[in-house]
Image (cartoon, rainbow, N blue to C red; front, side, top):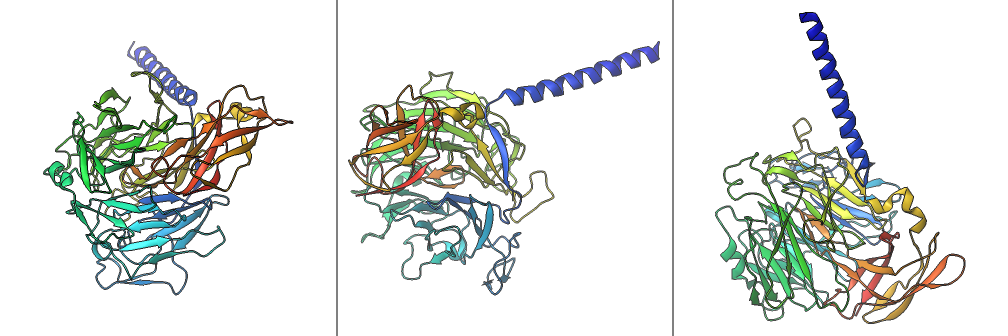
Amino acid sequence: MDSVLSQCLLFFFFFFSITLTTTTKLARAQLPGTWELVVENAGIASMHTAVTRFNTVVLLDRTNIGPSRKMLPKGHCRFDRNDAVLKRDCYAHSVVLDLQTNQIRPLMILTDTWCSSGQFLPDGTLLQTGGDLDGLRKIRKFEPCEPNGRCNWVELDDVELNDGRWYATNQILPDGSVIIVGGRAANTVEYYPPRKNGAVSFPFLADVEDSQMDNLYPYVHLLPNGHLFIFANNKAVLYDHETNKVVKNYPPLDGGPRNYPSAGSSAMLALDGDYSTAVIVVCGGAQYGAFIERSTDTPAHGSCGRIVATGLDPVWEMEDMAFGRIMGDMVMLPTGEVLIINGAQAGTQGFELGSNPCLYPLLYRPDQPVGLRFMTLTPGTVPRMYHSTANLLPDGRVLIAGSNPHVLYRFKAEFPTELRIEAFSPEYLSADRANIRPVIEGIPETMRYGDVFEVSLSVTLPVVGIVEVNLGSAPFATHSFSQGQRLVKLAVKSAVPDGDGRYKVGCTAPPNGMVAPPGYYMAFAVNQGVPSVARWVQLVA
């Protein structure tokens, strides 16, 4: 009898296990989106990532992190007698990825870039600021080049930051200059190119600082009225960067702290219509105290706040994600939807302080009603914890890099240092939508504010609705926030057939730098929710 019972139990557990496994695989298979491995070993774990107009990607880590897995060219070494790990450092801590070949080229950077900030200038040069130790006041530039070029980092010797900037945020302004906001023990703002008055006091950052900081890497969004929406901890202000004054205080956002070291993420939704309205979304975060207590298992927030930042008397509209998430990234897709990806479901930011990876991305659909805005997508398999990044690519995929929750590189750990680069393809890139995916055949390479122009495109199936033309910026992604991220939907006319599956779409460029600061943008044609491969265009004054 015992033998029969044992066999029955074994059969039941075997059947249950098979059924559960099959159901899990089926559920994953039915979720939207796909994953692919782009690079097996990038050589570095990217803490900061940016996509250039040459379809290359700059990846940047700390410099004082010890040996990476990518050597600098022979004869190129960094010497620093104050480096506690390597006095003579011949390892790369920055690389550039060629998206066409997936080849990696090492770059040389001299000063410490730990938890620094960045932004593209109007001419396409990447401005990179601050860090720790010898990089605290440093300003660096990377002028991108063709994939076969030899461009490299340049560290400026004739100018430096007024205040040390560690955990600061950069945002390009309507005139093409850049504001640099905050940083550890830096409750000020300053500008590049430098203004005569140097660093300007910004008491808001001191007011919102708590016993575990929670005011670092503030969320900064340039609104289409020219003012800045600046969010730190659980509060936000409207800041006039021309007079350096706060002109409005927004109501607090419920749910605890939202910025480093408790960071969720934030995005400004796509600007469209008459560009008079800007909506900000802030999602996720750690519970207050998790950082102080070094708690790795305190559940993360799952709440999101949404506010019309340009409203006269705005209030936060609350909704919940399917998962609590700390250290997630919010990526503006060409369609105007937002991908929320990476991070953990428990703990906080900081070395080895996160747990329970959040492998499931979410799609935030802003036009849906509350309760229906979040869609769960196909999960990844690689934990992307502290110090991971996500960036939109010109082909519509999202590049996923980094994850190193350790002081140095550790490959034998529960969440090891991650050198793999992946790409996530949203559902709009699925094979069954290929016949409605537009191809941009012609678009001006340069446009001025208010220009009226035509975009030529082709589509396999007939166009049955409005084809959007949307401009997406190339932000600087680090620490769960994409600095300078922006999507602007152009005013367009109905597509006019031009023979043989071709169409012309009349467009009007953004009206001014408040709506879209000068610089390079990825121009996407979007047909029935499916974006083309982008063409890079330069918007000039």
